[in-house]
Image (cartoon, rainbow over all chains, first blue to last red; front, side, top):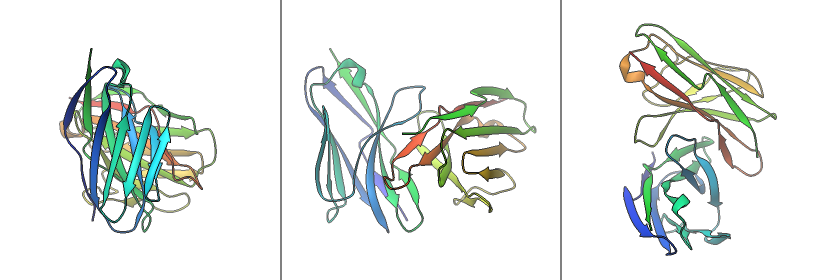
Length: 110
Length: 114
């Protein structure tokens, strides 16, 4: 089965850095993905990690440790438009499916 | 990336009726999925839409309630049958791009059952 945990809600200040953690327990792991979802909109793909280490994409970075079942999404130079829910998802390679965590609602304050 | 459209974008339906949601992709994809997202919740996988064979349903979802068609590599439908207010939700289709495992979502169908 799949068990994916992430904090429910976080608050950070514009211009700051925030780290959103995700822990998972899964069989057949084949990648960890991060999605951003603004209220009322569909999720949009941010990044994914298949191997251990850090992947950087502009203001967004994602880290993975497969041995620890742990990932984080790092957002730098926060902007008001970054206020959204951030979803951690694990791809199960045995069944070619994605399983999503409950999402972390990020509130960015001025 | 892939461009995905869904129809209808929203609907209000009476209990006991059925609604069919269409998902169209602008390129051929192998993997297509249907999700449900209830207000304030994350995404729950309903089923994997398989081209040329029956869909693969997740625990808690059955074909009689959520029949799925996948006639080709660019199109799928999900029907929500014999609806009740508990079926009020956003239904999203998604596709996975080969070689990258990246998944892209359609805009969603917001369903309200009265």
